[in-house]
Image (cartoon, rainbow, N blue to C red; front, side):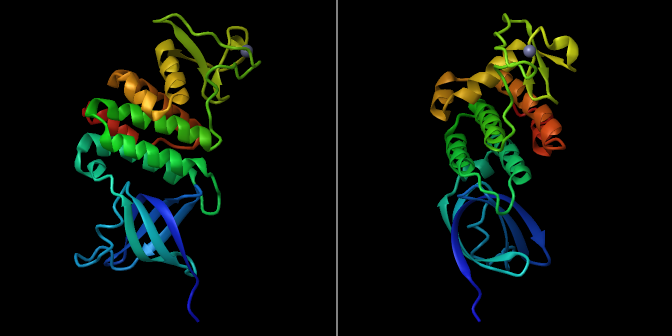
Length: 256
Ligand SMILES: [Zn+2]
């Protein structure tokens, strides 16, 4: 009996070696669920898969249902995002996006906005000037966390719901990473809070509330983007479980 097949548009998040010449590809499907499938022979130089299942590319795949993992039968590139593999700075900013999605998505768990968000972010990153690359990474991480049910509360106090006003430039905003966001002065004594530079929270609000086109026009300084990326790393450690290795690489790489 022929096994059931299906087609899917998906983004390649991760490739893992399997045996001598096969690959397991982890994909973000268009419905936001995670898809893992085996590409037989994909690591052989002669394989047609090798150039068609590249990291960060958007692909159309034909798969057949397997007992444990499905099998990729055919793959076609819809958007290559070639620069995200060629340029070190761009690659370093694409990697945390893929790593986060690998961590927060699951088979069968739909989250339809994640795919469109990520495809748009990768498009922008692919065309971004190097200095802008961290801003697209930071904005994607914040938005992907929000779409995955892990949205930080950046305006309303997590203790009482009161609006937490912008602190003056150079001041601090108080945050509870565990409780999920900013904390007002009245609630501060009863919560475990950390002081974060007001500018960091300000940039988190801007990147969370702006489209990628708006972010491109803002010309965000890498130092501002990195402050948001460090916020994201703490957020991920608290709410996803452990840090993103690729963000640690970005912090220590000296690339920006
Ligand atoms: Zn409060």
